Amino acid sequence: MEPAALKRDFGDVLSFWGGAVDTQGVLPYGTPQEVRDDVKRNIEALAPGGGYVFNTVHNIQADVPVENIIAMYETLLGHTL
Image (tube, rainbow, N blue to C red; front, side, top):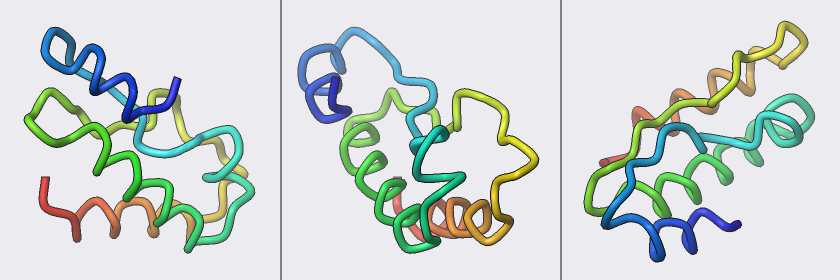
């Protein structure tokens, strides 16, 4: 399901842990800008009203480009939750 649909349908009764970024596609294979866009979209979908813990769900694998990890955290730090 899409993060916005999950938040809409279950956000009043559930908290969301994870969903920071697509860790199987965007984070390891995307550009830093694609990572920023994915992180921003997920924060905007899941954070409003609370009940969201920013996390990658799984460990970040060793072959993920460092610039993508930096882009993920810089986007989080620059976003008001």
